Length: 97
Image (cartoon, rainbow, N blue to C red; front, side, top):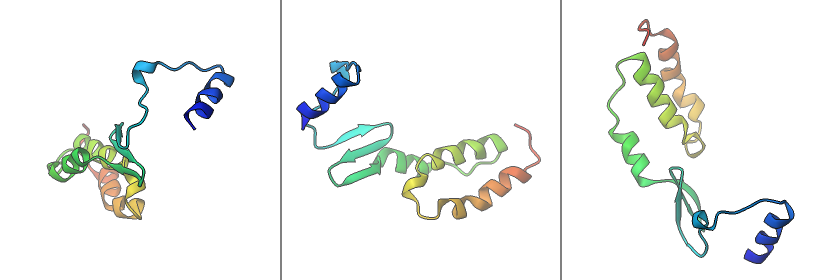
């Protein structure tokens, strides 16, 4: 399978930097996600960070928090519906930060 992949890379005239290639790992953390045979999930560090985040008190903090949790929206069923109160609050906040 690795050989097949490497041939496809070559056929596409792409180059790999082997110092950045990981082969034979069962688990890999990449961009805040844990990749393993059973699937992709958010890392424990990031879920802890979200849970420990202080309640936003300014428009800027609210935007930042929505960005943080929005990055993992694919792991939260009905994320858009759950986020509506926060996005509405963001639109209606009078603070301009």
